Image 1 (cartoon, rainbow, N blue to C red):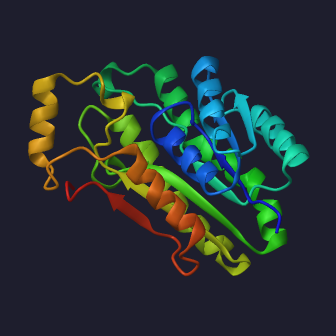
Image 2 (cartoon, rainbow, N blue to C red):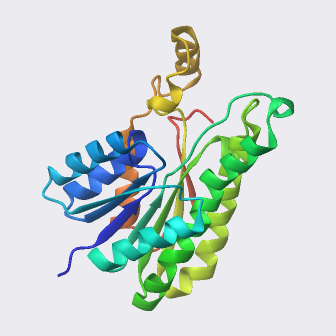
Length: 243
């Protein structure tokens, strides 16, 4: 049986890297991308290849259509079609909406939401032809509940959630499952800006009494890819009971 291929965007560190390594450990061919940090991306590639997995690494903006097209052409040439797409590329913006510049809004929408459109549009033709495929979108609890001082981030994640539910209905007849993982507070670089006191206060709000781990997100992503052919169109909260 030919090896399956997974594409994980935003995989130079944190959740994306953990997901890519998880699939590598299960025997997948792995394609990864990140926006600009070549050194971290290459480290992810080495960590993936330590599992004897083949890995292609791409540097570029997944919110740019031409960049995505070039990446998919490279994957097609090396591995064939993408069997599992994990849309993880994302950035945050913390601050009052009234202080946000239009270019900052454009950047976060392009990175967090347009990238999902680009990658799904490019992955779907082969999935539809094969009558199988898995799309997993990494979202956030703020896409469900909204967060003060993270209006733009919340809007993009809410968009991903709606996109997930709608696309699942559209491609369900082709035996393609589309789900999202709405992450809570996960212990990654994205939270490193918080002070120790802020982190303690945050953990106090979480019934599980701790931050989540990137590896826990990876475990769920793999489960959604490997199992659950009847589970689709869902936004699954992974937040320790927080929201």
